[in-house]
Image (cartoon, one colour):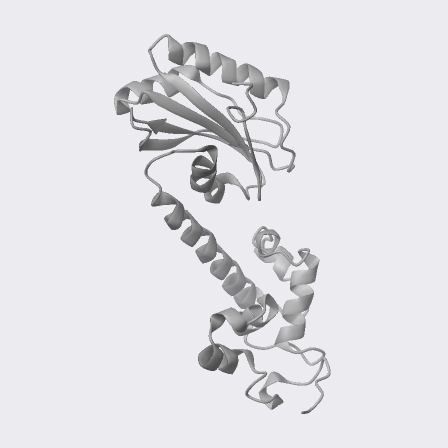
Length: 232
């Protein structure tokens, strides 16, 4: 067994240690996140192997692929050994992963809990650096008829147009609504404005015999449900 220093090229490693060979012969699940990144970037630099470079990139993102996915192309290019082509490859791979989660969420056609709504909405807004307000329009059987972004704003909030919400609800024949927005700051505590918007939409919907079933505040890994907390 030979010892690997940071500058030891992967091509000189044993086949059992090479990321590509490990993936082919042992399967994808046995590779570490750093090894998967090493496959994407192909090579490191004179000073470190692709795996070591992958570890360093991950460490800068708190060893979180979700955090890594938030880095821009320019931020990725600040790492020695990462040019534009490698940065684009990393960004594209992480975006494909995000879209894959989104496709899985789309298979949920009926909302039976706040977790179902979270699973649908998190891939869309959970990792954004700005705030967005989304609504799920539901049938009498709580099946998702339509989903739409109502507004897009900065970190401090979004503008919500009640008339647009009600018009879309009538157009879709919806009888139930699930409101949602993300908090890029990561806090799950509803603000006073969040409460006011919820009550405003709830009153408008009630006038049309439409129920606001929940309002979710979504972050990268968690959510807050107004209905579950009994404050709807």
